[in-house]
Length: 81
Ligand code: SF4
Ligand code: SF4
Image (tube, rainbow, N blue to C red):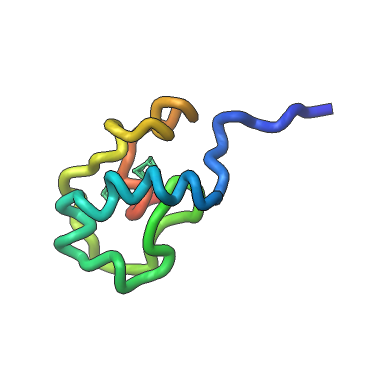
């Protein structure tokens, strides 16, 4: 039997609060007003933004504790995950 994958970020209020320290402050988020599109945060758990034609600029994910804890790679989860 498979054990739960600890590398998967769960969509919890606690994790959303962590994300709010990073995503809303990054250039990509501000430039594309990602708060106007779903999902608005925690892209590593909830999937990429529904915003279109995004350029890839300045991602803060590598500084995020969930990024480290869950062994995430690459960042830019609002664009390509
Ligand atoms: S890794 Fe990125 S998308 Fe995921 S919680 Fe951290 S800042 Fe948000
Ligand atoms: S996933 Fe990365 S690029 Fe996208 S909003 Fe969050 S910090 Fe910015």
